[in-house]
Length: 537
Image (cartoon, rainbow, N blue to C red; front, top):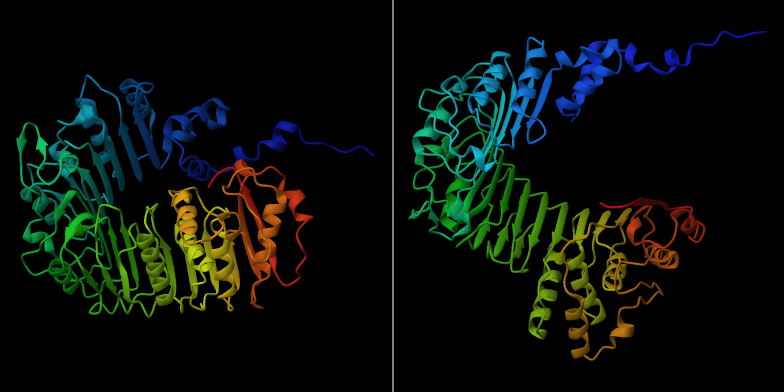
């Protein structure tokens, strides 16, 4: 009995049968418009699909010239553009094209507008007056270079704008006042000031003259609509509110490259009654004690301190539930983090060129771990674990932990094995274990070996696991027996609650196939072992 078969082309090209709206939605997923346009050659069905895309992403560079962009916009037929992204990385002779393209987006009632003019060719570009008036715009992202400025000479009226991100040299008080006054329902504000003085110290040479530090105007510290505020100040300018701070709706505050004092931080916190999330990235100054006692709603704290930034010496945060601390010098003391349920801890590739320095680092790491012993989720970085390894080898006791989900964000080498072994022994409530991390800066292992030698240890023996787990000095040329021995080590910890182990393996360092490893692993019916293999993370 013969069967009727559909033509192969008709059977395979099911996607072309989808409605235009779905096809256009697919073409908007992180696909540049010039690539979406190429679908027009697939067939007659696809010829005009791109012409009504709800989003346009245009990159003007050496390959895509202004004429090509003009032709694209001429063929575009959608009455409304939800998102319009324009990046210019090419010196155009006719600067008026930029005004034309922005006007095109505004005339199509754009809701999400992103303009990237970070190329040095457009340092003197001035936005036209019509740009500052829109009732449809909800999200605006402007990126200029370190000399670019935004100077509205007219009234700003972005009455529907909810999210604004500005990256530029700086803003004059007058310009900032106009912008804030023209955004009555603004909820998310990001200011990234990248003036050239960042590279010249507190007083920088810029266009052959010196100028003082930038200071946020007093009126900036009063706002009732903004819920998320992100401020990046060039060259560690000092944030010193001389007036009362009143950010009554602020839920999330991020400060980067700012100089702070105890007094200024206290004044800021007192003006944020509903603050839930505080991020301090590379903030220096004279801030000694970060006291969050009077911020009862604060739940998340992230502090990143590099080697050149002293930052807070003490953290008093009794109400937070999540703590992320990257302390390059391990100079910060956790005074009160009694409510933390989840934490991420790491230090930098610090030098341990003296016994006193190495002893200090071990003391600080153990103190931090003791303050976090009640956390249910812990993520520890490679350098943090290596310092724990030193303490374990020397017989220094580690605190017992109540952690249920432990992530060891490290590549496996012999210098983390002792620390991992002790962490597992001291985590009887552990239910899920994840091991593996991206390559990052690390403590130089020669310092570790030298320190132990001075303490009288044999470095050829002391890094070996008491349970027989073996690994080389580095993360390369990994054999299957290395991975198998470490997995076996992890399964020998005393907890009876462990039910899942996730091991991340980088294929670049392996000398075996993952399927060959599974046969060598012991079969523990109570623990699910998940092996992830990738070329990079």
